[in-house]
Image (cartoon, rainbow, N blue to C red; front, side, top):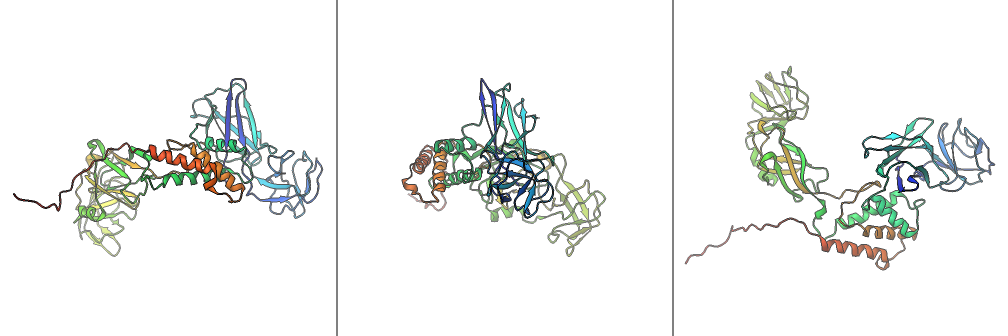
Amino acid sequence: MSLLPSLRVKYGEVVGVEVFVEFPEIDDNEKTYFDADEAASQTVLSSNGTNFSSGQYVVLGRQGVEKTEIARVSGAPTSTAITVAAATTFAHSRGDLIRFIPYNQIVVERSTDAGVNFSALSAVDIRADALETYLQRSTDASTDVYRFRFYNSADVTYSAYSDSVTATGYADNTVYSIKFRALEAMGEKKGGLITDSFLNNSLNEARRIVDKDPRILRWSFRTKFDSDIGDCIPGRWSVASPSDLRNPDQNENILAIRIGRQNYNLTYQDINTFNQNYTNVAHSTLSSQITTASTSIVLTSSGDFAESGSVDIAAESISALIDPAAYTSNTESTKTLGTVTGIGVTHASGRDVWQGATYGTPTAYTVHDGNVYFDVPFSDSLAGENIKMDYYQTLQAVDSDADTLDETEYDFYVSYLKYKIKYLKKNGEIDRNADVDYQDFVQGVNSLVVKETSGQLVHFIPDFDGLLSTTG
């Protein structure tokens, strides 16, 4: 279960660093209610506890409300009672909420070397009667970095880490800053309907609107230049496309691909043209691992290989070479090359196997199935050289406070979140065309469109094919 750990910090000359840890989102957790009024100092609570277990922590009351507290279940709960390990501090009324929470404490960690190494501070109890747990660090520096985990002191288990935050706080283009400005402007706080998930989803919704604006084919701020997407490994002919490449099965978002020191741009070929580069070449992959002691090679398909001869097996790494091996038989029904000799090293399943290929430096490429393929397998001399790509990124969704937006302008997202908060509170009964915040968002997008420039020179190459010649 994810608790979306979230914290914020403030730095001031008088108080030093103030750390605020948000109460976790537990609204979807198992819950029940008090069946009767309970005085303070009780260990047996009147409630249906059949969906709870011994050793679990529960929140008694609604988080952020005065006299709400956390207790630990002791013994097996029944349909009429929940026993807790320590007497309650406060009285609770019939109908008050009881909800499961997997952690009871917070462990904040501090780094004094820009987030490289962290040291844990003493664990503190989660404040159930507040929306944040407060920790003051009067002697810490403005350059210190903080993170935290929720902690179950009984089971000695932890949640995932929160984002790391510098003592001076989040930058203006972070998810946290956008959400904070929207909430502050609306006089709202997170809690109830307005959750982190709602705000994050609304921000991603707005960013998708901008990303898909029909007036802009590709936003310049999502261009990546000189990105290293892999290394040349002898005998291989492909590399995985970047995970953030927009439309990875097409070339329309690839500006250029370059190989190693040559640094010239490869030519794109459609798949039909590209396939002609491998005319009279047999290619398959290893169906299972082989070693120097192997006397047979099982391929994913052996039908295109000669009945006897030799094959080249692609290298395992940039420090190895193409590995030739001889064989005397080809059993197509089992996809097996037999009486194999000369295997130089161990090769993993899936490794490329060639017959009749010419190895060299690629001059062309194609893309499909999430991979970039080259017109010749890499030669031994290219081992270790970088494969560089310039390309347009797809929109990367944000899901944590420290995530930064890549847009060059982002203030209008505050207006969109304000509009969505109103939309939520009015159950969708709002005219966005009349809403000032939504219109501010639209104007902000329009401004971004007007300012957009690709920064790329456009080259026109005349095509003289088909032009009629004239004679005097």
